[in-house]
Amino acid sequence: MNESQDPTALKQAALQEIQEAGDLDALQQCRVRWLGKKGPLTALLRSLGSMSPEERKAFGQDVNAAKQAVQAAIDSRKTELEAAALDAQLENERVDVTLPGTHGPSGGLHLLTKVTNRLLDVFQSLGYDVVTGPELETEHYNFSALNFPPEHPARDEQDTFWTEDGRLLRTHTSPMQVRYMEQHKPPFKVVVPGKVFRNEAVDATHEAQFHQLEALVVGERVTMADLKGAIQEMADALFGEGTKTRLQPSFFPFVEPGAEFAIWWTHPKTGKEEWLELGGCGMVHPNVFKAAGYEGVTGFAFGFGIERLAMVPYGVPDIRWFYQSDLRVLDQFRGSL
Ligand code: DAH
Image 1 (cartoon, helix red, strand yellow):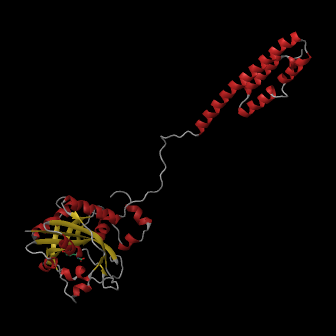
Image 2 (tube, rainbow, N blue to C red):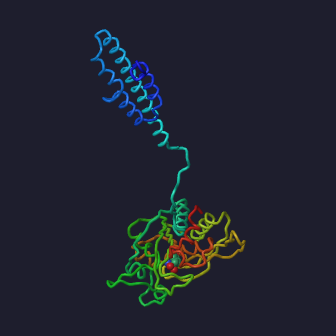
Image 3 (cartoon, protein in one colour):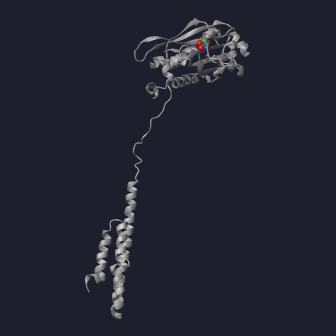
């Protein structure tokens, strides 16, 4: 019997090859080669027919035992290779959840929004409610109810944009004084942030659209001292305890007496000290109370432009930069202030 007819030798050769099969494809080829129809073990079984019965029995058992051993080896190698393939796949797909994330560019609030939010925080902490009103206003609330007589030159100082039905884009946040009073009972303290409009020749300090904050406090015995105190509290909160403030007489039709107020301010970078002229203020004019249907109360109001409070402290030299969406400007104020 030569080697190609010895079941044990064939089995050994097959087992060796099966062990060496590096992947499932190679193993499949082994199966075909050793157990397939044209394989050597099948050939041996075919040769049984020419043997004597005794020979056939012993040889047949040997061949079958060899076939079973080869089959078992293939099965166990297959289990091994499948497990290895799964390990490799898992390794391949491993995700390190501890790696730092990658994040895209994030947006941020506009400087004007931040300054407004800061102001609202300050006033809310002082007990004021925040309310807002319409940007498209009537002449009544924007002017007449605020004691601007018809044809009075003070109206010309606040030229604006008109709609064909006679309404206008509000020139200040003061119209909300009367609107609010009509809907509420004193005493109260409110602030009104919002967009206002003027028909201006645009330059570095004038825009056709900007923002104001209006304050209105009404009660039974509200005095000018309360007004001065409110401005002082705002200055303390914005620029630090003990910040100097000043009122200078001025005229606005809807207050009497009226004043302009300023805050003594030290530039954090240059160390330069100066008055930061912020806005107007005064005691609510009796005609304004009359327009709102109020009697027997007093109150004060003040209002100022928010842009100025952003430009001066943050060194923005041109008001137009706020509205040009130029990232070189916006990016500088993206972080927290
Ligand atoms: N509304 C005025 C303006 O835009 C500013 C102002 C002045 C508001 C005096 C007030 C005030 O509340 O009392 O020019």
